[in-house]
Length: 226
Image (cartoon, rainbow, N blue to C red):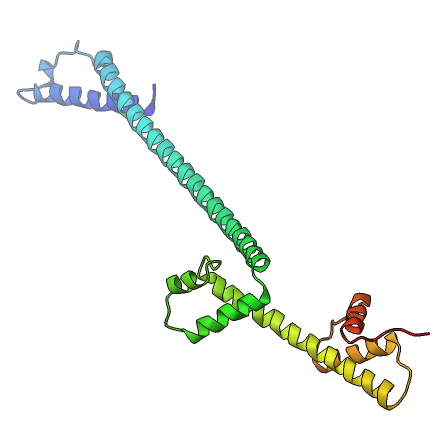
């Protein structure tokens, strides 16, 4: 018997005792039926106990269902958050790949001269909409092409200008040494001229390759003699 059942039975005994006392018409105990005994009402107790047990079971079942629903809801939310986070990360990665591919596409389909001509025209017509620019230059598919052109021209243009200054310095030094001072000039001298000028231009990682020297000599009609 559980604690709940015992409490119910105690209450039942108290009620029975109270009913017996009420039946007294005066204070003479001689009228008390001594053969009347108190006992547990098993039928009553079982019904009450069963009702209490059912009520308790329903409450526990409801709590378990609510707890399970909350856990499932939490799991679904966490799963959804993880999926959304993964989708966002994949989206970012895809954007990076897209930008890189588009950049390669631009550089492979436009020469530096074409880019410079397009930017020059755009700067001359600052109020023109992109539709007009696209109509003028059919190869320009999207607005971001313009910003890419500017970036490419800035980087490559600066490098090109520095390279031209290096070549011009090499030629000047070669002419002075050979034509005026009548000194012998070798490939090593041309390499030193190039490195000297590159340092003046803060181009510290500039390297003189064999192909660079060969091209320079061809452009300036410089031949090698024994």
